[in-house]
Image 1: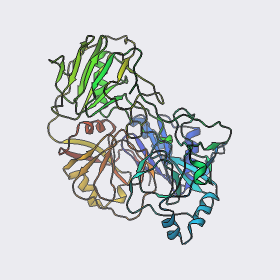
Image 2 (image 1 turned 180 degrees about the vertical axis):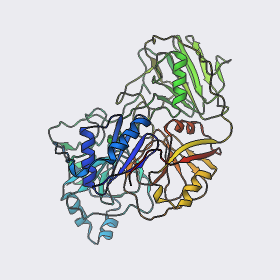
Image 3 (image 1 turned 90 degrees about the vertical axis):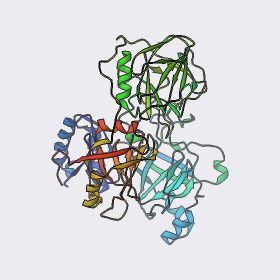
Length: 531
């Protein structure tokens, strides 16, 4: 069984496999024996995404992957979890699913509840599992028009898969029921109820049986009763506050460099959208580069010092005042108790980064303080009245740097590798991607930046089975307009990715304003891959 390895930017590879059994074998092999320099791997419907720490590790991984003989790999026979989920079969698409299959709704329920399902892989969002049934019989297409909001606990079908939405989200799956089971709980180990390999049974429950929130039952485990997401001191008072938020501006987040290696749980890396700006703020203050600071969207924030605290503002250049007096951007400054720092609207760019000597302190999740406001993981967006604690003084003193980044002028140029799914597009579409001056739309956030320009035409019809994606993926939905994924992107996607922006260059989109021009500097992968 030959392996096809596709390029997925300059830090990842997408291994294309012919069948789910091959994917299971490779997944098990990489779990048991990770490749040197491999950061993580993420199984999809018929693929395995392999992320590496650097370009050299990527090249070595490609060499090893193309020589693997899948026939010699053994599937994982480790003990797996068994989960039972009570379901109200009251979904708004139940009748439409029955009509599509040519059966009545009771038969849909009987088929869904009458077979054992296996969690093939996780993705899309934290706690979302893709399940396949042992006997099938429920294959249906996605909805023609996705819903803008699917309620949490919705039990759904799409293609060969069933799933349960852990939280409210847009979605195009067919909804056949609902449950009050807790699919994701950060105080549970592991947080996801449905982990890859788990066996799942759905049981029919009457509405009155689920009038109060319930837990799914899992073999050999006492169900958790905790609620689900980590929050900061938002709405509370810190025991030893250093700063108080008087005005948060458009969005004020605690961010570090993110939580890597948890894509299998549906948890994306998150972290600062402009990582280099956060690193610079920390270098100015003598902090380790990964120390948590504040990400300010469009400025407008006001903070009051409760004790002596040293700060530095980087990223988008914004006017900065202390008690109404202008102070320098990109230099360490000290606030005394009672002094107020005002960050104005940036002159250029979008996001400012406020470093704090000693770093911010809050409750961590998966060893990170990164806030993901899309899924609710990590610290909650800060509000007026919130207080912030600061850690211990670092050993290194604050130190100005010799050269600060200059204001960017002109187009945003993004170096990118073609693929992994460029073969889903015409040759003309790939060429068009590279020579078009794309315009940044108003639909731009930490999940992704949507661009406007000519339609990128596909060369094939149908749906792409869900597979892993990375930050910088240039995904093209049915509209033909590309979206470049940011730090809060879903871990899996079902639209083809025509190219992937280089890891270091993805930071540039953090400062992209609507109306600005983005150009892709495309190249083919420098790594020799087998077809």
